[in-house]
Image 1 (cartoon, rainbow, N blue to C red):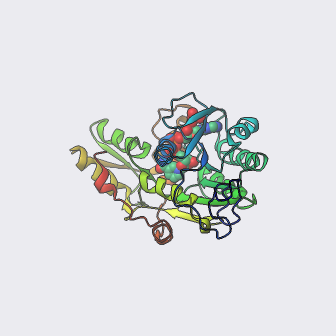
Image 2 (image 1 turned 120 degrees about the vertical axis):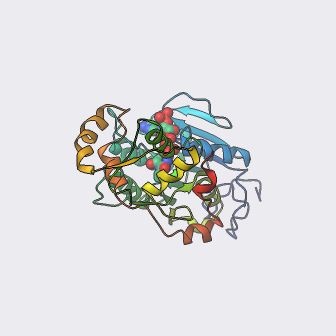
Image 3 (image 1 turned 90 degrees about the vertical axis):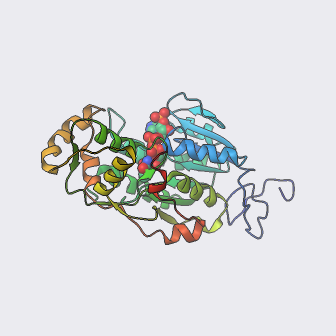
Length: 318
Ligand SMILES: NC(=O)c1ccc[n+]([C@@H]2O[C@H](COP(=O)([O-])OP(=O)(O)OC[C@H]3O[C@@H](n4cnc5c(N)ncnc54)[C@H](OP(=O)(O)O)[C@@H]3O)[C@@H](O)[C@H]2O)c1
């Protein structure tokens, strides 16, 4: 610290910025204490590992008791204000990742995305944390067919109206070790005598490498200009869903005939079983998302964070 006291930088919005008057933020996060909500998940555990390896002090908020190497766990629901305030106290920033991909029981999109984000914002104010990095999703918009995207949009709107120095990230599908999306494709490939493709298989995705996503989050912590901005995150190329299935099949040495299933045949089962049976392969929401493109312009991501995005093709054996 420059003058031996915690100074709040009006530009990068972090308490421990070394050069507050010039707004020349640190290139390192090593002095920061960061709360990562959802830090036990696929994306969260990677971000936590990266923060810890850079020397940051990390706290994680999640419901389940889990060992999170490099971080202290605060167990609690993201809608429990006292738990979030307790976890946020003394932190320089919150990385808010909590999200669900399928509703189950009382874990609804509205509760996880909208109510959870409202609580995190309130906790920021109560705990005096002014910097928020918020995880949304590409395709979040009002009037989207999927409730996932509609509630992600509502959460974004809360963040934009929060008065915090917030940065929003909107990734396409994220791939990496333990990626749920690639795991689901592998199940498609390895179960049964044929490969079932829902719809034409032509909808486009732009898979983004988990480490590139983590790099954007870490880099944003020391880039004052990213406050008040939203960034779409994607990989270097757009791939049709079937093309993606073919790539994974090739990597796994699977050769089976493919059958295209009209969405109207799977729709009713997805609507009923997807809601009550967690092992049913697809929900109505996932079906709606699978049938629309998830692609973006990554110029801002590349220029702002200096990332040369990795290709899925190079990581299929991970
Ligand atoms: N993976 C992708 O391809 C992708 C693409 C675009 C956007 N995103 C977004 O990125 C974020 C992280 O995704 P992910 O793939 O890492 O998901 P994930 O592996 O399912 O992790 C979700 C995390 O949130 C926690 N969580 C869920 N509900 C909670 C609650 N009510 N209170 C507290 N913690 C809760 C989970 O821990 P507990 O269950 O123990 O609480 C876990 O740590 C999500 O917001 C997701 O929408 C992901």
